[in-house]
Image (tube, rainbow, N blue to C red):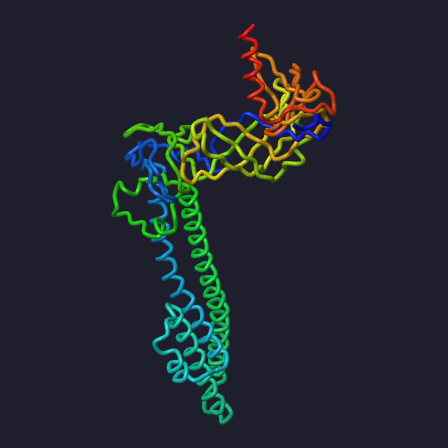
Length: 421
């Protein structure tokens, strides 16, 4: 026996929940291009690995982008070779101009610049330089002869005029060719840079469409119609949960063709009523347990990650979300479960152990110890309960000695007496 006592009643909060897909691990796949479905490599329910090809779309847009990239790469290759030659010519030309301005000997110039590309600049500069040197030597040869009266002054004037003209021509040519060579080098470098940018844009456009570095690197126009193939890859390890595509069907960016979900984890969702909102702060980031009728002998666990911010105006509930491990894939989205929150609601009530409660003809009662060996049946009105004790709202008082074990024997005696009557 045990006296009925007033004490704290701890009561677990249970909710009805539902298993849903982990929305952070669900992919609704839409093709990024329009085209015809050329291959479908997966079926509903198939397991896929990240990067696995699930379908192939024949797309004109992809084909044109591939060909444009191949063409721009070829032009870039040509431009780079031409630029290498142009930069070399510009450097060699500058070296020659510096030698000419230093009045180097022709033999020295030829020795230093032998087998170094100069393009058309070599002949132009050497012709002007030799003519300048020749006119200077001629003037130097005639000047002593004039002093001795051997030649007329007119010949000296002509020699000086020829030398002045040759000098001006050479100076002008040096300046012009120096600028032309530099300008050609700059323009060549800009052409290479422009084509490099164009190739980078072409490659980025293909990456946006889902092509990886390896596929872009190996583009070859000789592949034919295969250039227009746009593969659809699995975004992560998962299961195909929807398939809305058929072979040779025309699809586009507005058509969802496949759905993939990672079923290794699922979400547990539950609606918490306003009366339980005060418990939400206690359960944030904690684990909750739940059960499913499909697996009555198992207790599952989920970690709460969201306790809602808005009360639904119609249901007057707030949303709770938790993530649960589903490695063995036995939790199915759409399944209803019973959730037990880790927080306990407490109340000070008159209570007795659950083992003291007896039932007969729809009524609850207890046996109260009287004097000696007598026991009295008391009908009681019950309230809240937990797995150990129950609240008694009416029928007994605090301190009443209640039979908590052996009550079944007393109930049997009571029923036998009733039958005898």
